[in-house]
Length: 101
Image (cartoon, rainbow, N blue to C red; front, side, top):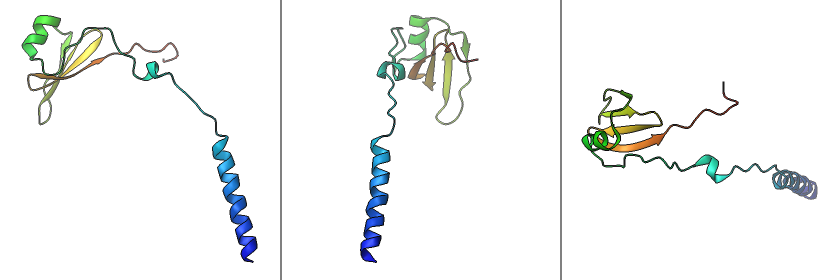
């Protein structure tokens, strides 16, 4: 009986391991995930006045929300996020893919 249980356990393990070893591997080029933009962007820690002076007026500004207050300035190709009056992040807008509708 012990031999039968041991044989069934080994068979189950080998079947499981063989399916893991032969799993399809999907790879994405690193550049597709974290493409670096060549756009000049506001840097973390810049003051709103410096952003205005260097990058001009945004297309849209959202009011601050939450605590701490987070607002955003929307430019044609990127969005700048502020905590109070200081840049915390600038994010490039990626163009839609051809297959997105």
